[in-house]
Amino acid sequence: MEQEITLKSLSKMIDHSLLHPTMSDEEIMKGCAIAKKYDTATVCVKPYAIEMCKNFLEGSNVGICSVVTFPHGNSTTKIKIAETVDAIELGATEIDMVVNIGKVMSGDWNYVSDEIRQINEATVSGGAILKVIFENDYLNNAQITKLCKICSVYNVAFVKTSSGYGFVKQPNGMYSYKGATDEHLKLMREKSSAQVQIKAAGGVRTLDDLMRVRSLGVTRIGATATVEILEEAKARGII
Image (tube, rainbow, N blue to C red):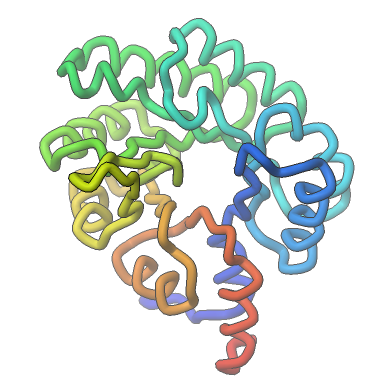
């Protein structure tokens, strides 16, 4: 049965993203104020910002999501685990971890699988949940499918399309990325177990975008356009 669409059901789909490398402490705090005002699921912040965001959001229903080896996923498994444990100890309730993209591209699935297993165990042991970022712009459908199956084996909480910073060099020398495409979201929902949720990140900037990906089975998005999305929902009479 289709769940009724309310403002809260939409706001609780949003991880308000505060990850740009140039963001100052003041800008991060302004972002936390937005998340608090609109009652988002979480703020998604860089590890050093966890404590100050947690203090600001004390007493609210907004969680703290932090990122591990973001955005490139290139650290050793040992360092990724240490980052995960540290983030949880500082107050993170959700962890967004980037896979080792080079190992995925190399087809070293034993390495990739064992790393996801270890980090998921560390996350769950700390009382948090794990979202595994694939960086789909770099991958083909077979690689995305394989990652979905691995994450399903370990029952990770979410699989996630993109970091938002996975830029691909184009023929003209410029860099761009597609982010969360309908094709990839459909594939991820089809190839993941029912228990694994889908997070779309990269390019979800309007209410129509949010509603479209929601219809494809997405239950969480990473967004910088939180205000625009939810104010548009209010303007359309969603309460």
